[in-house]
Amino acid sequence: MNINKNMKISDIILMNNEAIGVFNEFGMKCTLCQGSSNETLEWAAKINNIKLDSLLEELNKLNR
Image (spheres, rainbow, N blue to C red):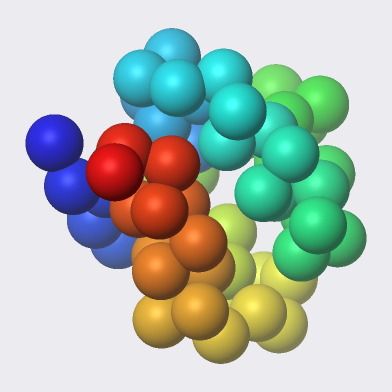
């Protein structure tokens, strides 16, 4: 299953806990945030000033 911008951070981590490493590489502390169960990937990338396309590419590499 491909990860998309509308998925919740917590759902992505539940799919593959290696996503935590990707989030950390991008400097995102979402994995520790209570908002991770409510925030979409798109929103988290926006508020962390991260290019969504680059983040999606790296996260989707985990599922290959």
